[in-house]
Amino acid sequence: MKPRFMGGRIGWMATAVSILAVGCQTPLPPQVRLDPEDPRPRALIAGLEQVASQRSSLTGALRLSLDAPDLSFRRPQRLALRRPADLRVEVLGLFGQIAAILVTDGVTYQSFDAPRGDFESGDVPPDLLWRVARFAMRPKELVDLLLGAPRPSAGASFAAAYAEPRDGVSVVYRGPAGRRSERFSFDAQGQLIKFVRFASDGNVTWKARFSDYRDVSGSAFAFDVRLSFPAVEARASLRFDQASLDLDLADDLFALRMPGGDEPQ
Image (cartoon, rainbow, N blue to C red; front, top):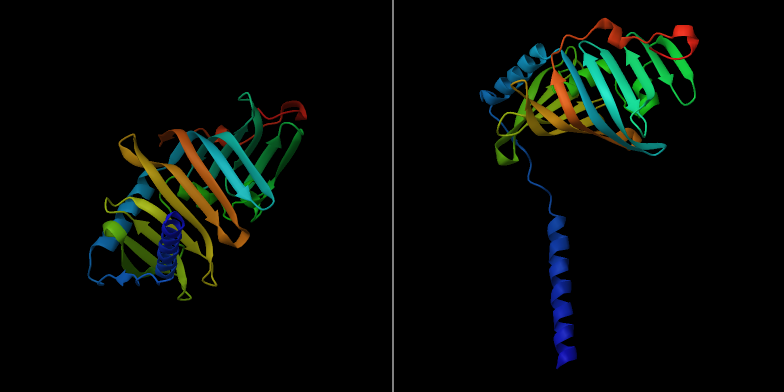
């Protein structure tokens, strides 16, 4: 009797697994397009635009985790940024010392690698952030993104809006050529939880997910930002430990000086 019982049990489990497998192949229901007169999509974008107009700068401490086919690391960092494209990133070593610095105003850049003693400067190349962190974006895009207020591309216009699970809403913009340019996804509370930027050919350039919103100076700020770059199979996680918004940052913060040609100040 025991072998018969075990055989029956295994057969039942196999049937259940088979049913589940078939169920997993069932296509997801299509997204429900919202009525063009629905006020929510434009209200959500207006709220995001308001956040963008109010947030001018960010300083913080975070841990960056990066996984790409040719580069992988996990390092604590200090960050300062200011609109439109000022950026300072300090990579910290094992004992909290500065291991590397990158500063840029979106036009020129300077970088210093402490272990190697290498200093570079020049005009910002299109792949500056790709070189240092496999981020397929420009400094201005990263500034907007980390401030929690990405914007539609220049010349983009409202295309459509869709209902998302749990009362969320997605808003799609299209570029001058008629292809999708951005997609903004909001939760039921109106917080941005996902942003997708598309290339001119319609493929995804990168995606960002926002979570763990906390109050910073009376404003909800995402302490967890996850990035993915499908074309190069790269993923990054930025987890803030501390963040301050809209401080008056000095211009000197976004420039390196090399006294004696030895090290940045």
